[in-house]
Image (tube, rainbow over all chains, first blue to last red; front, side, top):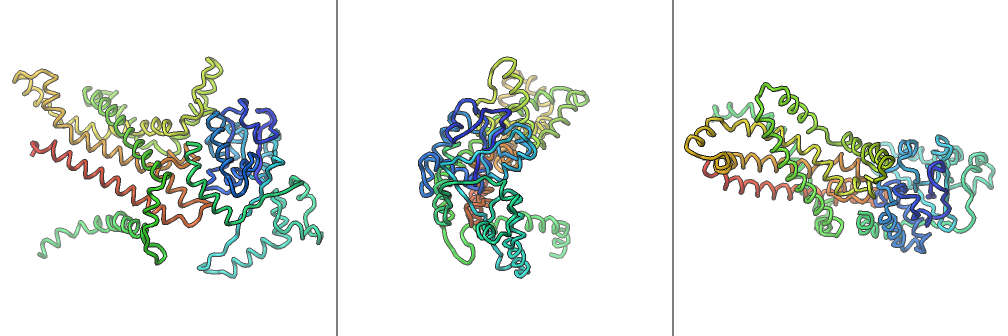
Amino acid sequence: MPSIGFDSAKVPPITSVNDLLRPEYNGKVALNGDPTQAGAAFSGVLMVALSQGGSVDDVAPGVEFFRKLRAAGNFLPVDPTPATVESGQTPVVIDWNYLNAAETAKLPAWQIVVPPNAVVAGYYYQAINKDAPHPAAARLWQEFLYSDEGQNLFAAGGVRPVRADQMMLAGTIDKAAVDKIPVIDGPVTVPSPDQTDKATEFLADNWAKAIG
Amino acid sequence: MVRRLREGLPLLPFLAVVVIFLIIPTVTVIVSSVYTDGVFSFDRIQALFSGTALSALAKSVLLSGSTAIIGAVLGAVLAWLIVSSPPSSMVRRAVISLCSVLAQFGGVALAFAFLATVGLNGVLTLWVQQVFGWNLAGSGWLYSLTGLILVYTYFQIPLMVIVFVPALEGLRDQWREAAVSLGASTFRYWREVAVPLLTPAFLGSALLLFANAFAAYATAAALVSQGSPILPLLIRAALTSEVVLGQAGFAYALALEMIVVVAVVMVAYNALVKRTARWLR
């Protein structure tokens, strides 16, 4: 799920999306990629849209928020990487929670917030190329990804595995790893492929205008 | 006939290179922009007239045009200053070597140099902020079109110097002496002899600068990560997006648009040079 990561040694603590508009965050808020290109940024915009009264069918409030963020001079049009986070160039980063969590391991002051009123989950899809020279090998790889072992590796990376619920019932999940993933109470929004298509169409037409 | 063939033989490798690296890619771009996966359609060409694509085109032309003009004028003045010192002078040799290096200094390294200096958290920005309290980076102008113009100019001026110095060296002293001995003032010599002689070379160099900026990708890609404001970045977005799939055809259409723009500029340049160079023949 998308989250807001911030360096608590450099900026005041963030508790909600609206905090980002405050002058303390001038030139400090970065988004991981362009939402018309990167899945992480797309989910980030969707998260912001939900926090601003939008919905998965209406991402316009999210784009409008980033326009305000840009107008306030808070939006940092830099692609955040572990290097920019560690050097302090991007003190606030909107990114997947598991990527932000990976930063905490290197930078202890790096804290992560998942705005409680705007919880979005996104899937990364797997696909097998139908012209693949060894489709059977690709299927074996996918079987591994969805096996208990593969799913626990995802959990160890800070991602909630897609089979987590069943694995908890069966008792095969890596408890230690899952306990580190933020617990979410309340509704989680997961865009369907159709909704994703509509939202990206809107972003393709409006994102560049909003932050240009 | 046989002799002609034999004379043409050494040109074959050149022809092969042109076919492989110029003609095949161009034809691929043209065909793929209207015909993909067995379907013929003008949808992708039509998509070129959407708001995002048109604004990218306008910004690309503005960026390339302005940096070509700024680079050509400043570069020509610098080249003239260099040429007025003797060929053996240390300064001249140093400046020309420096220009040869800087003209190739575009790309990620240059973008990083600017980011590290006057970016939002650049060394100079932070120092000025501390000492004078001014905010050099503003709200991130370096990451917008203004920033791109400044950064592009940085490699356009040296390129102009390299390509324009030979033209200036071609101006013979005897022509100036002849003009002066016929009673021309320095101003008149420049207006009626030097400038008309240099115009085709100047326009040609400016065109080279335009094409250089128009196709430049790495510098912009390193500076701008949001919103794909110019055509090469929009092509990147169409090719590499994780969220909008199946846009490769649109990338072909954009590439075709870029070819068309450069072709239009080439034709305009040819027409101009024909007019200005008519009396040279």
